[in-house]
Image (cartoon, rainbow, N blue to C red; front, side, top):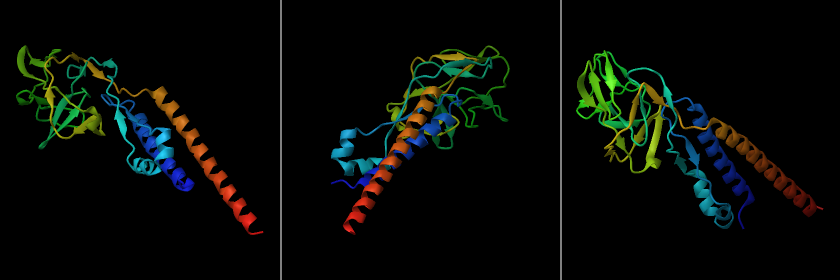
Length: 236
């Protein structure tokens, strides 16, 4: 027979994990290019028939990266690009490549095109150097400055979106770094993609989670009362 105390503990640990996920989503509701996370619940039958499996999953409850696109928001900035369809911009961080769909780009002091976190954006020919005058970015990712072709944004796709790990500011790590070039990018200059977090849905999830936590606490209190009653009866 499963230990009721252990089952309650496992349920609380799962609730705490879901709270962390929902909190991260709400905190990033205004982060351009952010991909919402969704906890994957363990079927109720598994919790009852296989408590050991339930206990293991309570420590490593999997989450699903929601890969649906966010809305494009018009900014009018020449260096902003909204990605439509699949693909991520690549950011060079030393020997590492990070990914982002946060297309609010800018120039650093050296004239390199960088992401919001300061990492250089990767073009098909390497880092992208611009002066910042009359920049045009076509839907294909081609970058023109003063009418001259400078480079192409090197967009890539990932085979397993669930392997993306959010590092903050809409930037993701992905291992192993086996990217597939996007053959036909679809970019829109002067726009950025918003987070795909549904704030109303997140608030509903938060309310449901709060009610579940309260129910779990009541179940624990009821079990404690039953145990106290049993001890008192045995003591007579």
